[in-house]
Length: 284
Image (spheres, rainbow, N blue to C red):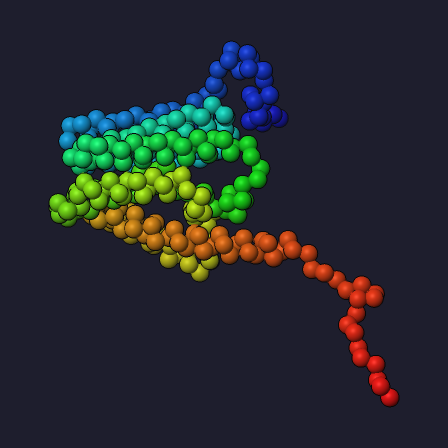
């Protein structure tokens, strides 16, 4: 019988032996997907420089789809390495931090040379800080949000999607007010702080819908894909607004889970042999 490869064998090797061996073929596949996501995000900047903002947004969305695949591919192939985790965060910082900031700046924020650039910088920096915080907590066991099945703050790919909401509405409706530079600057700063905040947000991978709703959810997903193919910009705007509406639900759900956990952890005092209730004696 052929022995199964040990996914942790590479991590047990000395640094010099790992350097000599290089990455295995199993590890190359998810890292290649990560590199493709990075290229897609950078291509979005190129389209924005050329003034084609539809393609620039589409390129970043493609980077988000690839980012959702690389981690699952690594787990499926049992090729999870620290190199892959670091590469993924570096790619995300460019695809979902630098690229959206530059795209939105080239779209409308350049009309505010100072405030617009500060808003773009705030978004990019907060995205990088969020990813640095994520990497710093990789080996931490005490992560209350993660242990409860929640995320901390808005993830970087979703942050990029939220930042593009004014562009979705501008492309879909053609209304120039959606490109208001002051309003978009405030919006970018708001999303930047949501990314680095400690707000508990829902984790799609941890959600377990009730059994009687699963068929309906499958139908909703199918209809959403159809809507994306026919009216992509309106659909993206609705999805973005729907996610924003779910943020208060995530906060309330986490508070409920935390109260339940604290209630289970609180010991219930038991009455001892001399701790029974005082019963008044019969005066007769």
